[in-house]
Amino acid sequence: MMKHGANIYKYANKLKCKADEIIDFSSNINLYTKKINLTLTDNMVVKYANTSYPHLRSTITQKYKIKKNQIALYNGATTAIHSLFQSLDAKRIYLYAPLYGEYEKALSKRAKVIKINRSKNLYKKPKKGSVVVFVNPSTPDAIYYDLSKLFALWKRQKCTIILDESFLEFQNLHSLRNQIDNYKKLYIIQSFSKFYACAGVRIGAIFSQKRNIEQLKIPIWNISSFDSEFLTLRLMDKKFGRKSKKLHKKQKKELFDILKNSKLFDKIYKSDTNFILVKSKKSKEIFKHLLRHKILIRPCESFDFLTSEHLRFAVKTTNAHNKLTEAFKSF
Image (cartoon, rainbow, N blue to C red; front, side, top):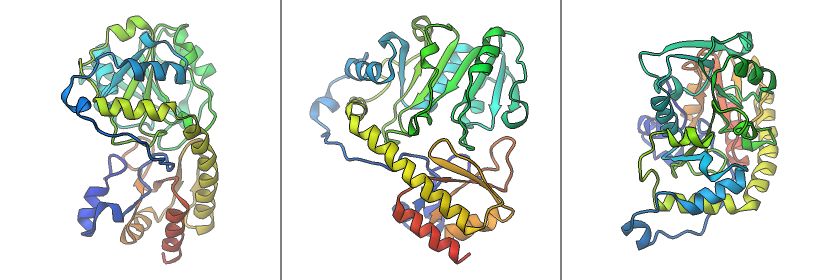
């Protein structure tokens, strides 16, 4: 069972090939990967980094329209998730599922966990003072939710709200970062790996009110000098965002049409980000067939409320899409 996308090394070993020979539709990283002119210098290696990361923090402030003291930087969003739950020590947690599996892994064994099926029971009222976790757009079903009604419900219940907006930037979708000043128990998880195409650069963030940020347990040197400089340059590149969104729109339609024309799927779900969920009674056969063609996709049986019939395809290049089309034809 695949617990996470991008497990190409495991499957490369199984196929007795190099990892870069596999076309990885399981990994939902931005397909636009513009090269960045950055050299690893002696200063980056020899000297300690400035623990406040002022240049990166200032760039994030401008890009995301929040204050510097509302940002906590981590060695990836997964680390941020684990750190946040350690700080909160929550006793009752509502997970709006399906969702990224690391949220459940990060929870204390002492915590009572209630899973809410988003597709069937979205407006179930959580108990007062609980923690609620919501990924928007969701994974692996790629749905963007207008959270205004749900957000109001959570506030009435005095909940601690954790929103993961890591897939928000692929399309022009509304963020709730503007509510940080208005609600003191709001935390937003932000991965930079997805949209900024830098999974190897491990930087994630938590956005929240100043007092909440000060109470988090953050290691003193949390990210490397190289990672910090790379992401700073990527965030400052205004053309990167525009070109990414334009290319994403074109390529997502291309992938959707390929999936539809294959006639292999009983259902193709509407997508609001850079991956598409499908359902087929032949999902296991499709997975094995594509793997023989060195194409890796994401089975979704490990997600709550989904089944072994669900598969996820990330949006890729036209060349990758063409190879997927050819593989479908020989199924």
